[in-house]
Length: 158
Image (cartoon, rainbow, N blue to C red):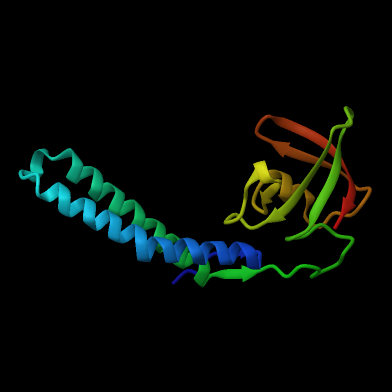
């Protein structure tokens, strides 16, 4: 059997997943089952769009439950302050400047389960994070992105 992929996350990220799992199991499942019961009461299931919709939603909820359980089972919790403070790693926040235009950006590198670029959290699997991991302050890095290469200089790691 192939080894399952580790899911890197902070303690906070793991807690959020556990809360979502609890909600899906205790509340959302019941809501979907109730929708299926109501849709069944409409009669002929072969032409019942409400029933089909409820069954699709049930499949989605059960799939998400399975996905979250797997992520939690294979969770590798990132401890803050772990590793070399001067080297970019999981759980670290990196401030850098784009060259040559000088736009400053800041991202925290997290596992894919917690990734939220709008909140400044990028996945360790992203091209940006892959280029930054293992680097130090003042390093100049070329990041290969789908929209082209960009050059950045690391200003701060914390």
